[in-house]
Image (cartoon, rainbow, N blue to C red; front, top):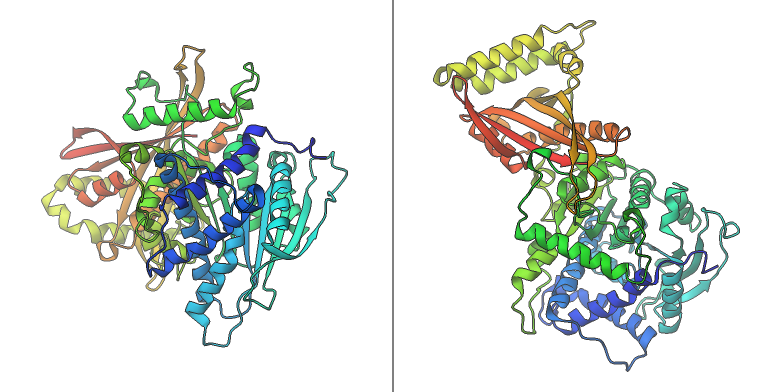
Amino acid sequence: MSDRFAIPKSISKTAIDSLHAKLSAVDAGWLSSNDNNDSSSSLDGYTQILEQIHDGIEGPHSKRRRQTPLVNAGYAARMAVMTFILEKWIDSVVSRHHNNEGINVVVLGCGLDALGLWSRNVIDDAFKDHHQHTGNQTPRLNVYEVDAWDNCVLKQHVLERSGILKACRTTNNWDGDGTKESSYCAMIKGTINQAAKKDDLSDYHLIAMDFRDICKDNLLLKKALDSTGFDPSQPTIILSELVLAYVGNESTNAILQSISRDLLCGNECSMFACLEPMLPTQVGQHHDSTNKKQLLSVKESYARDYANQFLGKLNRGTSSSSNADDDVFHPLGSNRETIIARFISCGFSMSNLDASSLGKAVAKVACTRRMRAKEPFDEHAALALNLNCYAVACAFGGSNNDGDVRCLLPWLDQSLNNSSSTIKIATIADSSQDKLVGDLYGRIYTLLYNKYPAIRKMVKSALKADFMADSTNDSSAIQNRFKARGGEFWIATDMESSEVVGCVGVRRRKTKECEDEDDKGGPSSPFSVVEYEVQRLADDDKHRGKGIGKRLLNAVYEYSLRQGILEKKKKKGVSVKLLAVTPEALVNANNLYNAFGFIKEESFEGGLTMNVYCKTTMI
């Protein structure tokens, strides 16, 4: 049976290597907890479980491996961010729920890590903080750890030997005959052992399955969890740390689709968080055909070298004739934009997801986790480059912002943290809303009309063209015009006053067919550049600071990416290019485009200075 579900030894070995590296970082003092900082002290339980797991493998008196200071720092950053996410999510859920509702923690590719097992400690600490004197009961914890057969066999051995679990029941019965793609095995059901607790308030499940088979049976993950009694209606967090990189692009997409469709299920209390490589997917990547000979920055050059070294290490001993699709290492994306595009293509919503570099995330949590080296360390530049080779992506099950956990993750996009729950973004619906858009333009541009007559002429000309579009049965003339031009139009409405406080439209410009040269001199690869133009972006000055402009641009960006994804189904490579032209006099609009990642390409005179911005994303 194990041969059928075996994974490359270079991958299974990473579970043990990661355990040794994390303990090395702890031993070097990178995650110290010797003062009275409660948040940091809570890590004691996590490191203690890591030590128990280590002793279960190597023996209690075995010598630990010591890593280099740079490796210690990198693993400390990973532990700091992942434990921070889990701790903050549990604290948020426990603080908002006053009954004995269950909490699910799902760890994909659990390896020999302690995150799932540590969850019991975190829930108890959060309950003491919020409900100690209320008479409420501590929530029941359900931990589901899923990994490949090889790693599950090793973890099963460790858990049985170390005493981490009690009331442990083991089984090696597979669903099906073990030859079908739908096979999985619920290997262990037990209770996390806590000497101070008399009540069994946690269920632990260890499930063996091959993640690579999910692309053949897109319900495989759901079936495996359902077989253990998993209830997605309960608050659920799904965690993944350097797992998706090893299962292949097609399987990663299938896993993301299953998480979005089957596990988050629109539950506003649920979230998915992953820490995965963010590197060039291959050395010969597509890029703009007008700039084929690019000069790489230090960051880009380091990322390419790091990707090649990582891939070379994992492919060591495999056939040299294997092609890129057979590689055992596939980054989540090459940058934030490509990761977000990938999530959107797998069913996630732009308004409920974000991705940041590990460097950005750890900079926000370093003080909380007190990441201070107790060993000599002078490789700060190398550490910064290394951390920027990893991404922390978070997706949420719902869009309720009231006390949402996203507010507790300080590195997330500020449009997620600051967006007002009273402002609704939706496509324009009827002619009555057309009039409200006209009123909006009248309010926000009145002061500019006298100073810049060209702006008055430009706005009146644009609105006249929009309102003259054909409309029937009180449909929106503006919407009809943008639809006819291959686009869409959105409005931001204040739900308390029913007033339109922002708007934006997008239209399709053209599609260019291009060819990209391989960096190694190989054959060129054809791809398409799909161009869209942002138009009519406006938001009311009275509502500044609520993230309206950013949310409107999010709607445009998600729409253009989804259209590009549809285009990609017909072709191998697609690049989505968003263009925007705005007067230089509109300072806030220019600042918004810059903050959203647009690059200023040129300026021209047309009665006043106009700036042209561009944002390109390779799908």
